[in-house]
Image 1 (cartoon, rainbow, N blue to C red):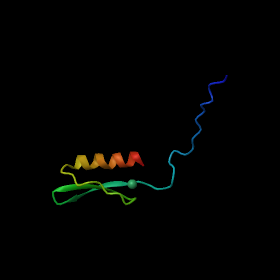
Image 2: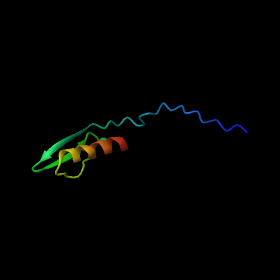
Image 3: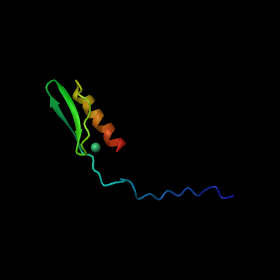
Image 4: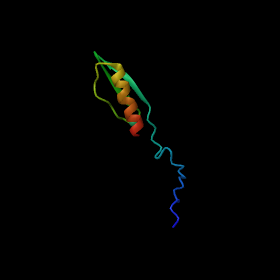
Length: 61
Ligand SMILES: [Zn+2]
């Protein structure tokens, strides 16, 4: 039995043309991550946290 047929040919690195470009904006004392797809993260006290939200969203696609 041939058990090695795991050839990974995947040109679909980025499926769907939706591009996710995130940025963070300050709202009063809070910082919010937002994306070009319309996504919006929760209000965070720390900008670094908002950036993490943005990165998580981008990674999740
Ligand atoms: Zn997005």
